[in-house]
Length: 353
Ligand SMILES: Nc1ncnc2c1ncn2[C@@H]1O[C@H](COP(=O)(O)OP(=O)(O)O)[C@@H](O)[C@H]1O
Ligand SMILES: [Mg+2]
Image 1 (cartoon, rainbow, N blue to C red):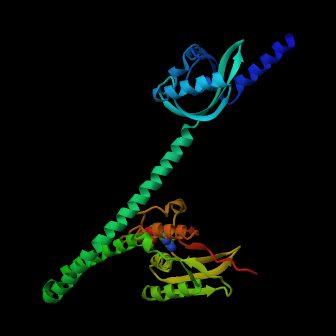
Image 2: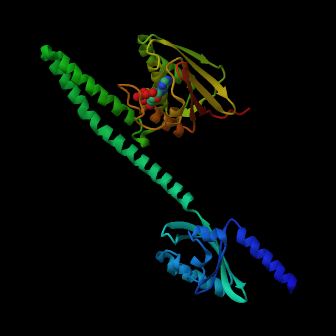
Image 3: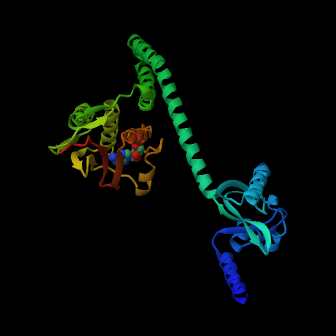
């Protein structure tokens, strides 16, 4: 008998220091709570909790359910695990918990033992993440829709301004100003439109080398005008990729444009296409420009960060989105005043050997 008592004491001590909240209660009141549980409910001492009803701590919306479950536990001698509940702490703060319960004999009487886990932090993080991604998707759709609607009237306004400009030559500089402002609107809309019309997107097999060659041809005029030379290097054996050609071109144009703009006094850009580990291709764009502060690099996928007078801060955000939708990744490393390397990694079509 003594030994049984002693081992019971041991158990109690173990339960007391367990890093989980443990409650023992019957229909009327809480009979036991360990230290962790006491802290979870914001109590200073056990007597703040002992003797009270569990319903004092359960959010009223959950009372009925809790009662039903308790009845079930007692009558059917089952266990429940990880049941979600909202509790109210002594300081009235609400916490989300997961409860696992079973009925036990406590000091000779029937009671219920519950292990309660505080999941408030987890819940808040997932909820805010969910909210954020939903919001972003909505904003993207709206922006694309609006961009589309603005583009047509913009084209006709531009046409008329050009017409007026040729008629009223004395006011040329004003017309040029209006035209350049219109061009700016057009630029911003252009960046948004890439995200538009997800239904019109077609993924096709494509040779990355020919895609890169096309892009370099396109951007070369701008490069030459800025005294920038682009050197392209291809590894010979690169597999095909699956991509939405126009979107991917947009990504490389964005990155090359940034590289050119980072070297206002000219310089060189190295573009290297290499096979990477298993079934991947790496495209590196290396410039010798101004560089990006280290703490800025993680935020480049967010919209509206720009250091340029005429920048939109949308190019990289859109590039990240496009590469993400191609199951690829963008890695940026940079040293101030030395240059920036942007690496785009894309999956290639697996080759059977
Ligand atoms: N290659 C680069 N070298 C230096 N800074 C860069 C480079 N690429 C991007 N950046 C920085 O990231 C910012 C955001 O780029 P981006 O999203 O393309 O918008 P924008 O070019 O319109 O400013 C740029 O304003 C610039 O400060
Ligand atoms: Mg840019």
